[in-house]
Image 1 (tube, rainbow, N blue to C red):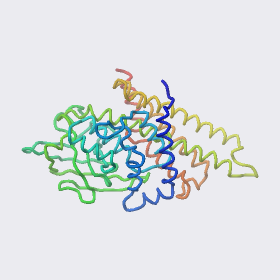
Image 2 (cartoon, rainbow, N blue to C red; image 1 turned 90 degrees about the vertical axis):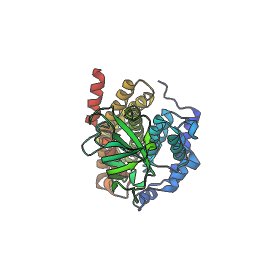
Image 3 (cartoon, rainbow, N blue to C red; image 1 turned 120 degrees about the vertical axis):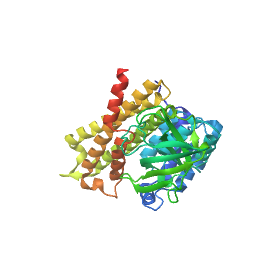
Image 4 (cartoon, rainbow, N blue to C red; image 1 turned 45 degrees about the vertical axis):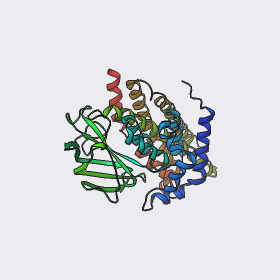
Length: 382
């Protein structure tokens, strides 16, 4: 595999890094996440109008740039390095990925809104008893004349409090854990003024993101809310979620790179017994271990990114392997960085504590280490 970036990809990386360096300093971003809105709409507009990254990986037919997995990796890594909370993965990778794979004029119209920055999408998939299994769907959708009626509950729907559109997975046939029989429905959404039939409970997660628990009771949708073919949504959900996992692995690499750099710099400045603590051999060994974990994470993420267009089994194995590697490394780097900073590592004033919280969340986002170990083992047997 050739991991060398093209000149265009290097320009994308440098432009995004420059934008975030000038417009996304930590104090400003933490102020935004603690505001009532919970994010910075001006930054999102900048992503769309100044950088064009919201359409970088989307097809040209919807005004995107037609980029691929490598462009996704570059963007996600830089967003992770800057600890960006705006909903890039939820909207551009998951939401737009489901719309693009489902197809249709309505889906393309929403994709154009994603590219322009007008649409933000939340995917309501996980349920109170589903764990991390996306096809364990109990929410039902039944026909009532030309309409659909949805009943059920979804939990930890990230981005829902600031979303303009909601994509919901619901079972139209089959048993609870069947991959067949799942359908996708898309509706306009405003958490502050939800439509009749949806109860919304919104909250902030430990890593300063926003999420909602949703309850559907006789929620009525028109016929055209159905995305793609009824009962065949799993063929869109599985590759889209794998893409999202690869993206958050790249985000974690960006986070861990920043954490390691800051930790090394801190140990050069902090003195004990009249010398920098970076001169202590025991601490040097710990930082070397952190570096090794980061390098392994980079390699696993590259493999996952370059496997996104491989066969479904090869893609799934590479993605799960990367997620296992990232989960282990995120815990190792996060905990060691905090310990090497001492008690001040968890204060609001230092970046380390904020990165540690995000890395902790990334450990289990889209599946825990154990979940992906089990998935990899099952795939390896087949």
